[in-house]
Image 1 (tube, helix red, strand yellow):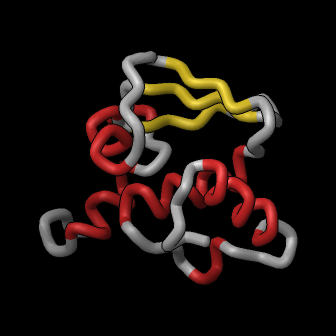
Image 2 (cartoon, helix red, strand yellow):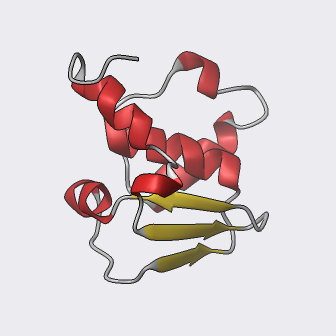
Length: 100
């Protein structure tokens, strides 16, 4: 992938990338995801913590929400019959009306 060609692709590279993250996101299934404070602060409520725990959100749905937060869109293949309803509820929790 060539960087600098597409902002969306460049930001997609940063999704859940531990090398460039400064926030750990812990999910219900005990999977750890990674986020960039600057991007999350720009697109959602700011958090000054380095670790955030969401005990009722599964990592699969959280990754979809991160994809939306970072890029403003979600790839069609990210949504399946197994995760679409939970993703809707997570989007509602974060008040991401366009994702809903």
